[in-house]
Amino acid sequence: MVKLRRTMMYVTGNNPANIMEAHLYGSDSIMFDLEDSVSLKEKDSARFLVYNALKTMDYGNVETVVRINGLDTQFGRDDLEAMVRAQPDIIRLPKTETKQDIIDVDNMISEIEKQVGLEVGSTKIMAAVESPLGVMNAYEIATASKRLVAIAIGAEDFVTNMKTTRSPEGIELLAARSNLLMAARAAGIYALDTVYTNIKDDEGFMDEVKLIKQLGFDGKSVIHPRQIGMVHKIYTPTEKEIRNAVRIVGAIKEAESKGSGVIALDGKMIDGPVVDRAYRVLELAKASGVYKEEEQND
Ligand SMILES: CC(=O)SCCNC(=O)CCNC(=O)[C@H](O)C(C)(C)COP(=O)(O)OP(=O)(O)OC[C@H]1O[C@@H](n2cnc3c(N)ncnc32)[C@H](O)[C@@H]1OP(=O)(O)O
Ligand SMILES: O=C([O-])CC(=O)C(=O)O
Ligand SMILES: [Mg+2]
Image (cartoon, rainbow, N blue to C red; front, side, top):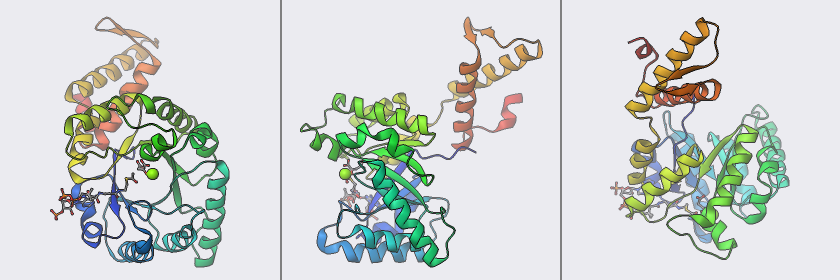
């Protein structure tokens, strides 16, 4: 079954109550933050708190991610030492700029895995790209390590580095988003979009989610539980889309049984890519719990 990463909820690493309850809100992943939402004087206590939470809490099926501090900071190495031992599902490297950043993390993780007797390669990583240099190097970053399962854009830092701000339409992010997406797709990994910081602006948030879904992102980081449902709603295939996909799959099977790879349905041509998209809709629908295989025969 396809793995859903529609929502990855940030949880500040120094907030015990949120760390204990973050998995109860229904996001596909939760991301404990040791980086920018934690002040310098709280870095050590946040690391300790997140380490203990991962060791003792049962987060069930919710994927766990930790955003560490960059390895160019005084906290990065300690974060990595602790988090490889704590074993979240994924470690997220912020502000990734070059493939060497990933290779360095990969090598350090391998060392730690060997020290603690974990299988080398078992710790997965994702890279956040948050600067023009990172965007220019997106494909090299996306293919720098077998551990890499996803790349994400960090728009707040990106627009700051670009000497601009975020607009409602997101025109200033279009090139970066597109480049990152193509890098992820070419590398065969997930592409994740950035946070929307105005928690109260549902309309603006949903417009952004529709845009990034249309671009092709697998999902988005969120910062508040109330954003989760809105993303899932937009990302879950509708009944109409499912019905249409089922009909397409049925039509092409019938065509194939007659020795043809193309057929018309409702006046539209159905061939390979159309069928691939239909199967993708059904996979997402299955993973989202709104469709079961046997319904195809109904
Ligand atoms: C640019 C960047 O780097 S962004 C990434 C880093 N940023 C973050 O990690 C911030 C994550 N978000 C948060 O910490 C919070 O949502 C805030 C601080 C923005 C707002 O928090 P609050 O003022 O507490 O929001 P609010 O009162 O609406 O919260 C409602 C409930 O949801 C909980 N909640 C809110 N956000 C989160 C979250 N991210 N994770 C888990 N629980 C949360 C609150 O604890 C509260 O629970 P309660 O009802 O049991 O008391
Ligand atoms: O990863 C994110 O979306 C949040 C972040 O750090 C940024 O926008 O700079
Ligand atoms: Mg950032």
